[in-house]
View 1 (cartoon, rainbow, N blue to C red):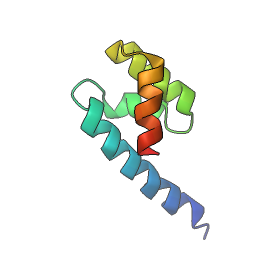
View 2: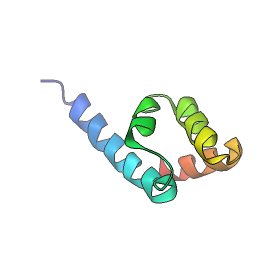
View 3: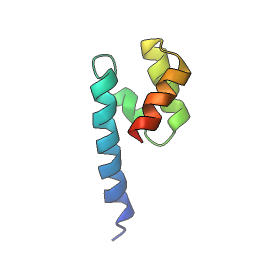
Length: 65
């Protein structure tokens, strides 16, 4: 059995929890899952929903990751 997938799921769940702490009132799980494996896409989704600047979102994401 490949252990990378469970570890990746655990990491994603940790990251998603932290993202929810910041933007959880405006982001759905479906929106977060769309950007799961693509940081640029995730930043764009957060930007589209919140209107926050890409640089601000990236800074917050860098602190999370």
